[in-house]
Image (cartoon, rainbow, N blue to C red; front, side):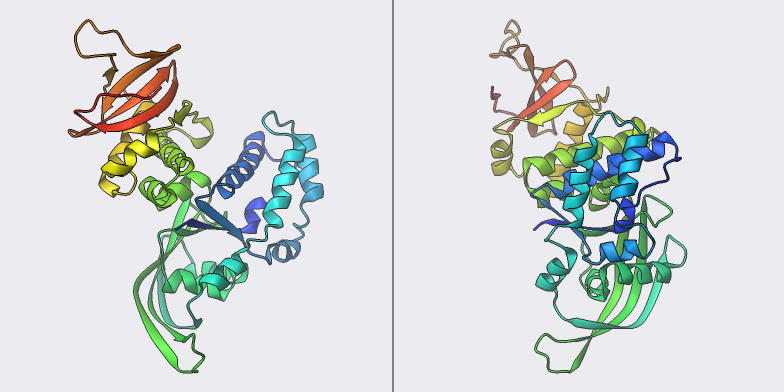
Length: 344
């Protein structure tokens, strides 16, 4: 199962050239973030095939000229103009568009009846109309009929980083057999989630679910990054100032997690993500100690070149072995407390 993100094309509309530097940098960073997420094997990010048409109605497409002007007026140190243009072209010309995904996964033809909406945003009906124009009625109804934690809309048309429309009511739909008989599905509680950045997207899904559904090292990295970013945000730090310490996963990490439940058991995965996050953010309350070459008070610490080996409790039953070089981390393996080994 992949995680599904649906991109509102208006998140790519260029800010004005005279916008402040932070806004412009944030715009380009978001493009890079979404492209990075889109390229992950565990993630499917879709854009409606009518995105260029919607943007053109507001004189926002094609983006090439405005984008070029914005890039050349603002010297970007972290990315070249040709990279940005290549990314934008790949996003808007992606054959794996939303309509294809919906047609392959649709369960019926629907029509709406009798809905009641509540929301943490004003005018939820207007947002539903925006969704319908953006991604089509079948996609909107798929959100409602099959509400799923792994399908979220990414849009900048919301007042907060995460907004939700809650709904209750009923839908009448035609069965796939084309019998013409209307069936009814009663929805007691449903929800459409909308986010405006990558971190909010991963947090809305929850890092534990990113880890479990993604089930790849790339997904593990995104889960830990999200947990770590949320740690700093909870302490009042702004997103633009957060810089995470470098970390990676060793060649045996995945294999060591598999037989003991740290790939797919939510409680265990949550504890492991928290432990990894505490190391990445250097939480002073999380204690760890040297991993030695053998038992005994005089044994020296295990080394791999300049990298030093450490061991840390995840809970009372399992521990994590990792390598550390100054602020850089490599997570080696997870083991039962009685197992002492680390992979070089």
